[in-house]
Length: 173
Image (cartoon, rainbow, N blue to C red):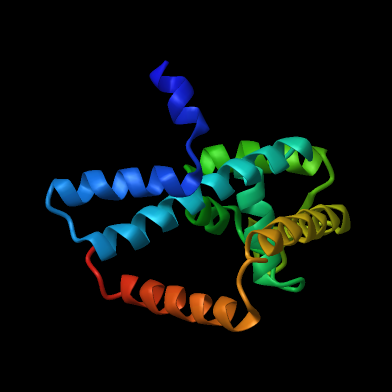
């Protein structure tokens, strides 16, 4: 019965319940309103992104590779070691992941012309097309999420979140 009631609560009701519990335990209400809302939003978006990746038959690990390669630029191949570090996985795990992605035609591996012991990884045209299609679909959902805000409010929210994020570099978190 308690689960049935919990399932009917709206997102904002869940956030308010959590904030009230944190405040009752001694936390600062304004801080908890922000961090709890950001966490809840992040969790919901992550769930949607996971479903989206499953729909296009891409694992989260493969997505990490696709997005890292896309961000590096078309003419900037990366090493498997760099990709392993960016994805926070062991190099051997990255090798297996890259093998699967080559088989699917999402990436290419070529010998490094300046170091024959190294391999360079790049997005294939098919890999970039898949990446771009996923980004466009995500953008539609993310735009819908922000439709209740004015353009000015979206810009303000982005600026405030960027300000908080810039503080992470100096914080010991």
